[in-house]
Image: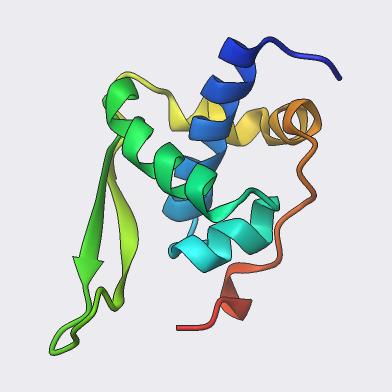
Length: 108
């Protein structure tokens, strides 16, 4: 399905936010595995969530160093998470992303 750069960028941000919020992919390597996007694109997408007023933060693991932890969505801002969930198949189709693996398979 062809989509404009604006739509694909918007959908990519929504999908990454959903992957994090659902617990499916809360670290950059897991986002890469779930989407196939390059590392830099994943990192840029995480940063760009703030442009949509999606509050995404990295939570450092207690007692750990060197950025050991995971991302958390604290607030979806003006985005309706229910719409994202209801339209996941369409979002994946537009982006050409496969269905992600279950959240339980993400390694620490």
